[in-house]
Amino acid sequence: MKKNNSIKDSFDVTCAGYLCLDIAPAFPDTGERAIEEILKPGTVLKVGPAQISTGGAVANTGIGLKVLGLRVAFMALVGRDSFGEMVIALLDRHGSSSGLARTSEANTGYSIAIAPPGIDRFFLHDPGTNVLFSSEHINYEIVAGSRIFHLGYPPLMRSLYRDNGQELVEIFRRVKKLGVTTSLDLCLVDPYSEEARLDWRAIFTPLLPYVDLLLPSVEESFLCLYPEAYLALRKKVRGELISHIGNETFQKLGEDFLGLGCGVLMIKAGHQGIYLRTAGEKRLAGFGSAAPASPASWANRELWCPAFEVEKIASAVGAGDVSVSGFLSGLLAGRSLERSLKLAALAGYLNLRAVDSFSGLVGFDQCERILDSGGLSLLPVGRKLGREWDYDQEYGIYRKKA
Image (cartoon, rainbow, N blue to C red):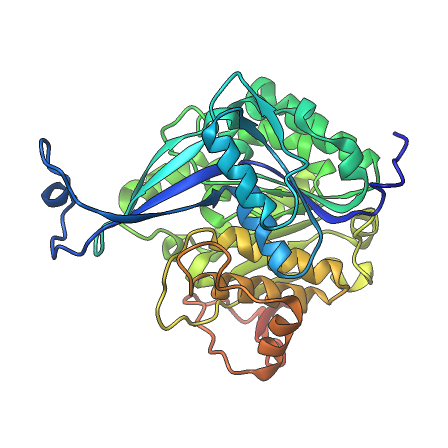
């Protein structure tokens, strides 16, 4: 593809994929701790002003990257409706919505968050235009002017995963052909849904050789590759699942994903930290425009980074997406693998301090000063890693011995 000189080298990252409008009414604290005591049929519940923001990987990761100081192109599909106009206006505050495509075939996706104080939140959600997003909505000229192409939430995007993921493979194949480094994030779906019943291993087999950076959560990974084992554990454990997923599962997921062809695997595990594993030097040197400054120093590594301790969590909305922003910013700044991983953990920590996905985040230089200050406390990993792991006091990271 011939590049337009006005677009060439215009962006650090193109963030593509899932985008929606999030509406979160402010609920009063009535003292009730059961949802049925608050949402009663035939009654009117008075609420406060609604917080309206963009949601999904495009906004969460993309705006996170913007706050960190990077040049970002947003790329998604919205409707020709009032919600679409609101999404465009919100993204224009953070740069440019010029990469968005529009359609009259569906409405813009949206979520309504039901989150009364003291009660587990739940969402009313319509994916809207996201189910129609496909390769034809990618502006490859903009992508060609970027160093990284990041796509998020394909398990919620029907046009991308149908026919064994042919559209998804086509997008990443074309992007890699442009010499741009590729990045992919997943999302957790209802384990009994149509999306969860897909053969994700069959989708990943032709896809991951074109994916340089794979950045999912452990639950997403576990459900995609081992759905029966995931469901068995889900039935056995009430509440938080991550602490019950053993080390051997993380390592098996690492072996599987790298065996399927990705270059770097970063598995987000909430309060348990981040597990990271990398392929060989040859695979990393082929990353393209955002290859590590020293591929040899990134190659054949296995790390576990503890999470930072947060005194009071305001919200966990978008924490995983924003941790991706931190990691990508480290890679693009030429930082070491360990430093990039710590930036991912820090971005996730900063996210937890605010009710939205990016207000708690600060610029890249300030992030580095926070890391260098050594003023934050690490949470214990909460699992015995074994004698094959060494602890690096300088970085606060566990390394698997060679």
